Image 1 (tube, rainbow, N blue to C red):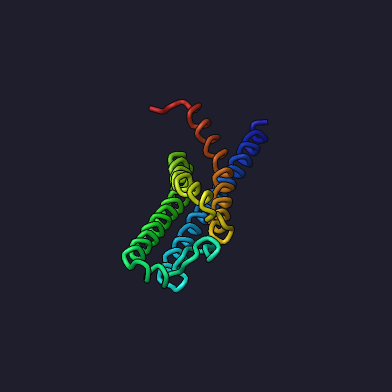
Image 2 (image 1 turned 45 degrees about the horizontal axis):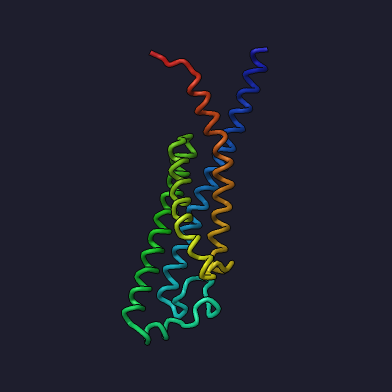
Length: 176
């Protein structure tokens, strides 16, 4: 009877470990996807398109040349914002990927909370401004939506094993 219980516990532990690893891998993958989006964002700043991915004449009726001709200072200002935003997106992606891979995968709930909080804060601030100005095109936000969906699946997969391990650890007697 004891052996059967031990095998059952071992199987549950193996399953939880596999789920935790899969979830944290998806979270890390999404973090790398955020970096990829930031790189696209950064590169477009220096191309003829200038405007962000998925933003075209339907959303902004002028392009790089017209903005520069109207006001070189405004063009420089917009360019610096593109560069800065791409840096913050990439930094968030790096933090998420590292926290997921080196923290969540090893069972650290604090890493999960931090890895979830960082993109949630960024998206909570950035996304609402897209809708009233009709910058919510699938071409513009589609990659972020996809990366976020992958991230959410990973975060949900990894949460239960983290909480279960925490509950198990808190019920164990402390040693001397």
